[in-house]
Length: 330
Ligand code: UDP
Image (cartoon, rainbow, N blue to C red; front, side, top):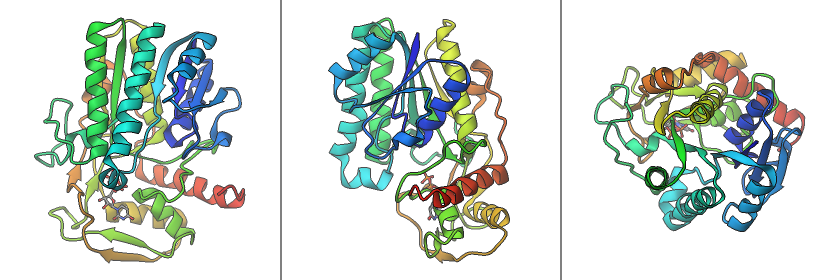
């Protein structure tokens, strides 16, 4: 019995692989290395360089390794890129997921955990924490491509012997506390990654996109979740499905928000020195406040976050970023 992790050489996938290996699972990774790195994959896992579009290769991997569960991360994740290349996103995220789900059904894999996103909600109607029953109104092809995959899973699970968990991630950040992997993606645009790069002098400055929002300090509010807690939720989802639990959709966040300025203060504290922060205009498409109601993950999956601490998240991200430079990997 083994777990297939698609996209296991990427940021979240590589943390997932370590968590599975730590839990004693046999793991096989399929990744085409378009944005991931083979060195990020735990050496205990079997690594196969392949594109998930290659369903024949996927089928062979599933049969050869006795796969009973798939955790599906492979896909494209840059929201503005999805706006300029929607068909590329529908291909990578939706069409390729269709092929994966079909292969799972045809080869009899009974469990699938899917990497979904809070982007399926678009801009929440209120600033209150958003629950899974909120309106689904994605505002980018990225969000739509993920929602379409959730719907395919729902319908495939109704028709076939497949149960799934779709986990809707809020703002994932941080790195493995043991320093084994972290966010290594080149040209990342996410706030904590970009801020640690600015603090370490890898980029000249960081822009604060919008200071006139109707929030406490005028900057946008997000629910930043430590990647270690996020992958722990996947382990719980896997146990839930293997234990006979029903398919479910669940938010992954902590239920509290921090502003952009809160995050930059945390980076300054962790770094111990100032860096160049510039107030800038709003970034198109940003929602004012996006915070998770994660009651379902806690109650149904028994998920208990252990790293709900902005300073800890930022410290782990900064440590990883500094190590990337030291090891001259990127
Ligand atoms: N942000 C910022 N400067 C940056 C990157 C992000 O001010 O260099 C802001 C962005 O406008 C948003 C928040 O930080 O309000 C989180 O953005 P991120 O891209 O990390 O995640 P998103 O919530 O868009 O998925």
